[in-house]
Image (tube, rainbow, N blue to C red; front, side, top):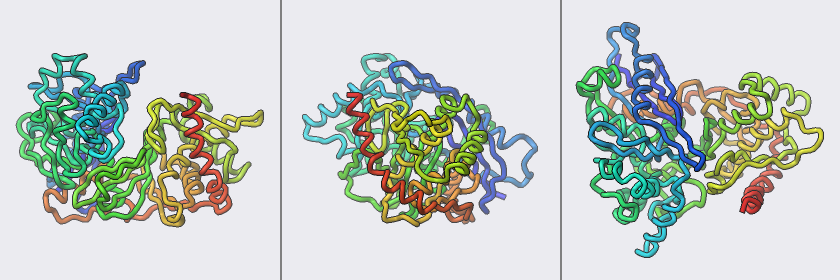
Length: 493
């Protein structure tokens, strides 16, 4: 029975799954890795940790003797976090990877913008997205004077752990279009690397990876090094799937345009696949990421969703776990009913991406009084995440099912809040990891295999309906919540 081995190297961990062509998840494994943070906004990871975690996740998925003897690995399908700067040397990365959450390159982003403007180019319009300190072009420009030896030693660049692993396996330098769209270096009009941005960033264009064109593309096969790196035999096709947001979209709704979905992971987002619109139309906060077949992924991403919930459990509930917090919320609903808490909360713990792009924005809670409880504050935080996500949805689509995935989707009270705030029935997709399923779908397409892999939205699941009176109250509250972002930003300035 052929199976697709999917590997997702995400923000905090590596996750692997062996998925059969009939859609069954045969086995899974995972392993975490650390992030190094600095007081000035730095966020880095050691690519060697990615490889160690990948091996642990894969060997946990494929322990010797645990699988049926006729199981065949049809492909290794790679995806993972995007918008990381990885400088590749002769024997691995020459320095830690700079992560997409790193905020130290604000000045360099301004310098690139100015240089492009002097050449008659608008960086945002060229890239199709608003550019800031998290642009990989700005990250590299920052390193040029600070770490000249590392930059000089680098033989190439990739933009995430999936590309790094493919390179470590001997497949060369590759980048999928979705990940490329996050870097600030892709020309959205031509879907090729921009020479102008590369020059402004101080990047030799010969160092940039080759772009893949499809939802999934075979970029090589495992060689002799795969056994030591991952515990895998040689000869397995290596498929580079879209970066994690694109792979998740494939796994949730499939490649056809039209359906929104929500994610309540460490970060959170509302996303949908759409036909390509004007490549120079820039949304101030949402991202437009290239996909295959003249489509693109529209994604409105919060920096903190599950992260905001975890912080609130620590700050308000004394470190209570998620299950205990859910019981507390269920009790609160029984006492007060569903509907607004009376608080307005911004879940922006350190900068924000949506509904405003502001690296300096910090969280806020409005509406406290002497009767406010810890349970109210925790509920208000989840409510704030739901309200933030709701600003990305068309209110005319009320009543249309909204699939939701991610760790937060396991929380019934949070799903109820999301349904009430958006006015839409919320479908909890099953426990299959959407990103791993999407990578498997990309792999099956790349290999031209017949399969029975079905996106999560087509598999059914538990639907949470909105409470009509609560939904009406949140609809009135939504504009006030949106205005609060500008108020808090003005206070910070």
